[in-house]
Image (cartoon, rainbow, N blue to C red):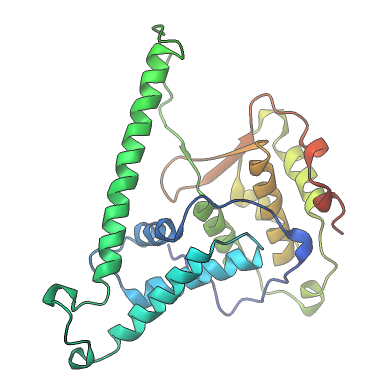
Length: 270
């Protein structure tokens, strides 16, 4: 399943009304590892042209969504472009002082990715052990009896999983008429209310079902930003059965009414 954005699709209109101040805790190496795993690529033999194109397309979608992007994402984009250009040079034109193992322009990036992946895997293992200990002994060290465990363990959904889901929905969307492209912008606040209604009563719904029936790509983006805002406000939980599997969203247990906490700039959006 490709993470590419369909370059032939109608552009999504941008609007400052949609800004979601969501801090992205994952960095450029996380995005590269995500794309490598999603496309089932060999980390030691990265198709640099493909990965560069997809990386830049994800950054462009993040820009359209008006997410706050750290400068290191742009630095990595420049690094990928530099590696790509060096890969196009004949070997004789590469710097003579390079060590033999450095002849491949991708090698430094590969080392960074491998080391970072080791760090992430170790951190994930330790976090899992900590959660297991907490489940067994409780916060004060007392022994707890474990109840029946669910057959499927859901994992937290990352920002790149969510962006990928929107990307796939935009690719599936029918070409828009000119009137739809220039239609009056939708309101994120209204979409927040709609998402809360659809997830009320303890219902779990698939994220992509929220995009079904939207009149335009702009409405899809508006819906997506509403979901992001509700996740940020701890009103919604997004879960996934497996990597790159379907994303399910539900209300957090015992949430307060989110409408009262929606930021003012979203309430005032047209």
